[in-house]
Image 1 (cartoon, rainbow, N blue to C red):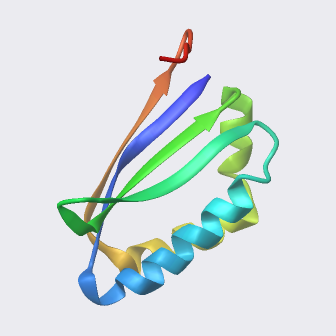
Image 2 (image 1 turned 90 degrees about the vertical axis):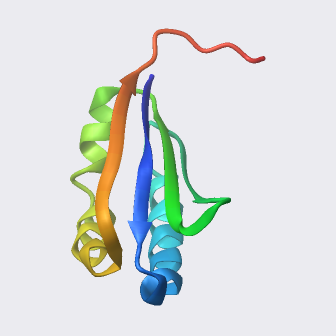
Image 3 (image 1 turned 60 degrees about the horizontal axis):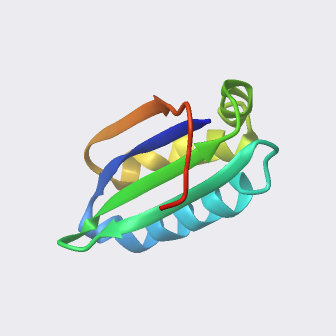
Length: 99
């Protein structure tokens, strides 16, 4: 399994548009083959910091995700929302167990 996690700082004046774009992106992405989960969250101490958490069945599924029209549209919109850089990491997970 592949996990992608990170933070995105958005400008306060574009936050509502960023929320709409993130929700549209999540709705479209969760329909993709190989997407286990794809969610945006808000940092409890800073509502202008979005957290992203994705789970993918394989590298191939994640690679196909980057080629989708909704990803291209999201990447075109993203710069107008950003208050800073993106801090996103990709993890390869060998095993998963419920706690």
